[in-house]
Each structure stands twice: as structure tokens, then as C-alpha cells.
Length: 233
Image (tube, rainbow, N blue to C red; front, side, top):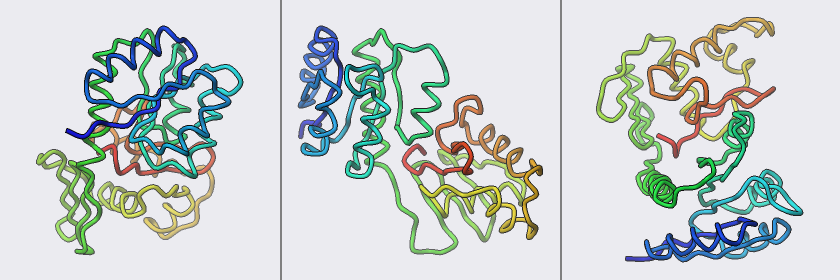
């Protein structure tokens, strides 16, 4: 079995040693970085399969490091956070991070979350050549039938809900503004007040098992619009 290449950015050397040792015993090759100022260069140079990034670090916090690596790194990123503030978790996900684990970290839990992220990456299915079909992970959309399947279960959507999901998924990893969504789906100009699209996004999240309080599949990008995240299906 090929080992998973990981970079662990954590300033607490005892935690770093504990986690790296546990992961190494479970087929991970781990590089530890204790100083935030050095992290971005190590990640960009090594291009690991996954980055485990502590939020609070000396010299550069996790958000800063993530911004530095994002243009040049295509692997997975999981944040470690000691903060109980949902704002930090929401910020991490809105920035594009794949997951987060709260401290104190249980090695077995961390390992399970890492394996889950890697499975999703391996199972990601790109849109098919059929213009009426879109498949991402466990999500399958059929435009002609307006059929939505998630984990092989038929999800009942109204016509307008399906059209919104189709539009978001056909522009995966692209932030779509409310102006664009309203104009495309309803044929009218967005007046800055209409909440129709926002309400439908909330409904879609509920029907598709995406936590409305902390969405990860269809996320809100503050001041810009909505983003469909393909690898999280």
C-alpha cells in the first residue's frame, strides 16, 4: 500500500509527535512543521496529499497559511482548531478548507476524518460527457427527468429546486452571485431584497443532508453568492 503524504503544521511539539507517530503507524508519511512562517514553503514544495493545519500558530495563523498555499496546492486541507467559536469553523469552510477537527484531538478521530477526505477525493466523479447528466461522488442529476439521486436514494425536488441545484453543480467551484442566479432562473433582475434563491438554498441543504447551520456542500461566500463544492458529495 502506498503511504499517504501529509504535512502537519502544529506548534505544540508534543501534539505533533503524538499525531505524527500515530499516523505513521497507519500508512502516512508525515512532515511536521512547528513554525507558521515556514509552513507555506514546505507545503508548496512537497505537494502532499493532505495538509493538517493548526489555526493558531506563531508568526502566521492557519488562515494566512491557507491563503498563501491555495493558488499552488491542489490537495486536501483539514484545520485543527481549539476555538469553540463557530465563526472560525465557518470561515475555514468558506475559504475552501475540506474539514476541521476540534482540539483536544483524538488520533483515531483525526485518522478517520483524513481517510474520509481521501476516499472522497478518490471517488470524485467529474461531470459526464452527456450534457443532461452530472455526477459528483454520491450525487447524480438527470436534467431530462429532473431526477436527483443521492447515495442511490431519490431526493424529491420541485422543478425550481432542481433547476437551482443543476445550475450550481454545472458551475462547480465557481461562486455564483444572487444577481446571476435570479436572472438565469427567474428571468428578472435581482433587486437586492428578494430572498427566493436564499430560501431555496436552505431547502436544498436540508433535503441533501447538508447541515444548514454549517453547510459544507453548498456554501455561502459572504458578499459574493453561493459555491457548489464537488468533492464533498
